[in-house]
Length: 310
Image (spheres, rainbow, N blue to C red):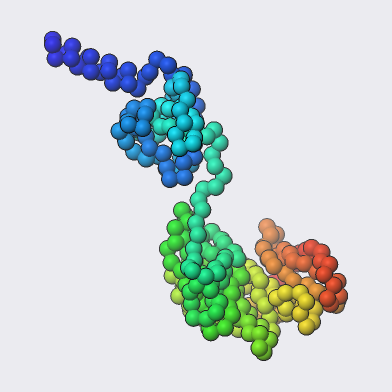
């Protein structure tokens, strides 16, 4: 009987720790706003033992809050009793929000120099493929930079492509074999030359082949229904060059061999095209800019819809 009494007293004590009299019932969902997660504790204080860490942006069920506010590390809030998965305990309510943060994650990749990405697409495994350029890695002054991440944005691998001069990546798509097709460019300034690079890789980013298109600067790529590719390109990569830029669309087969090439414009204006996508009716949309004659700096939006181009 004495043991039972001691046990009931102990149970009452634990209940009193969790359910304090000065608390207010809430019974609503909240989200964790602490960037590195929030500790779930067995008591409503910093001295409470850690049960687990609830990750950033996770949804929790808010059961109740204590009556008095506290300020911890400049954040003011009440201690909150929450449940998350199979756990229940106390968290500091200053890091609870009613709305989920729209940012799922933020990542950075690069080295000690200038690095950037130009395009990102989701891959079949739920991860992401990024393409851009890097001064930090590779063989030359600036190289094409290809990065594969998992669904959480953590890098799985990265590759560089280029020579001793200036190379940059513009666009990338995943192919049916799990590999990637990307458009990049090789430029030299003395003498002034431009080469569009079409690069095919395997699923690990290792190069399988490269095709070169002279006197073209590549901006975007889109897969076609026959497993070939459409590339959008210009003759200049920036306005104010020696000549006005002309815009082209290039059709290749699955091996990168040119099927045809067509100029998108026929007047003397500057034209650059930056993005291409396929529509639900299997036509193609292209956007860019078009300007006045050479050396004038007024530009308008350039919007093109093609037919199926097969």
